[in-house]
Length: 332
Ligand SMILES: NC(=O)c1ccc[n+]([C@@H]2O[C@H](COP(=O)([O-])OP(=O)(O)OC[C@H]3O[C@@H](n4cnc5c(N)ncnc54)[C@H](O)[C@@H]3O)[C@@H](O)[C@H]2O)c1
Ligand SMILES: O=c1ccn([C@@H]2O[C@H](COP(=O)(O)OP(=O)(O)O[C@H]3O[C@H](CO)[C@@H](O)[C@H](O)[C@H]3O)[C@@H](O)[C@H]2O)c(=O)[nH]1
Image (tube, rainbow, N blue to C red; front, side, top):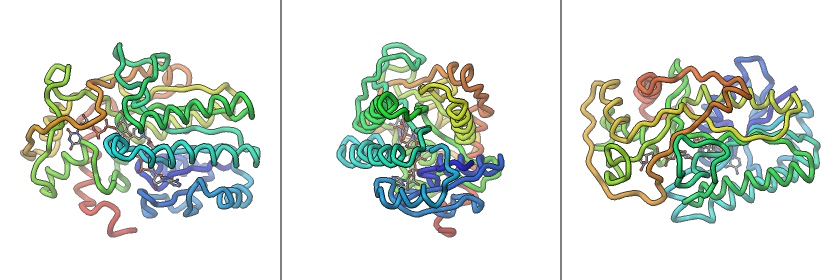
């Protein structure tokens, strides 16, 4: 059997493809390369460049690869701030794209899908850590687009029997331990890669967006999870579906929160660089704190994350960034 990975040339997708190949699975990748990199895809995976909303193209992929039994879907836009100023871009690629994909999956009879949801579907949680059963009330269009995807899946399960696992990741950070693949977004907007670009001298300073949040040091608190641990969770979720279990949703995080200032301090320790920083106004759409309760994934899927130390996570990211100062630019 084979697994189809949509968005397999992206940051988290490339780590999952790599892990699947290491485990001896047959992997087919579809990616439009709108934000991803061809060089990030393990060479043993079969690669198609194209958009998942192009139904003729997707029919061809399924036809040429009849061994595909499950889909892992990472292919989406995911920047909270951009979604605030261009929401339709998010509803189009993420939500409408999902409808086009499910139509083809139903047609060709592939009825198992694991998909990237997000902590951003919870909005401003009333209690911490966040449980899967807590209310989902997004405060940005990105989170809304992903919640809509979850709802579309629920009804598609009921009507067409398409079984899904929604994996709600918290903040993803780090790179493969050997430093061969990592995070390379253009423009880069995520906290840790920006902090490390300052450490490398590629930027002058970090701007800390908001220091008057309702948190111990006034900066936002986030829960960081490593892409290799996420890859393992996806592989376990595929197995869960292939074992004919019901549709489900799981949080994926470490259950520990770090403030933006704590991330900066930890990065200073790991890199032994000064990393200048200064405060800046709040960015739109940021909740104070997002920390996961992820016992459910451990109990039901048997997920055992390996990276439970923020210094270790930052060290893997530092290895990638310091050995690839131009990201994949030299390889693409
Ligand atoms: N990075 C995070 O912290 C984080 C946290 C929670 C959830 N997520 C979700 O995880 C997924 C992957 O995130 P990432 O950080 O790896 O992003 P990424 O941009 O690195 O990867 C997304 C990949 O999908 C491809 N893609 C996008 N739209 C496509 C389309 N219509 N057809 C085909 N390919 C398309 C891109 O080219 C890219 O390779 C996203 O769905 C995102 O919403 C990410
Ligand atoms: O230059 C920067 C960049 C970020 N931040 C702050 O750092 C924190 C983390 O921001 P970022 O790394 O951009 O991640 P999030 O906006 O929290 O979103 C990530 O994590 C979410 C889950 O929590 C996912 O849904 C999103 O896809 C993913 O981009 C936030 O408080 C930002 O305001 C700064 O202060 N300065």
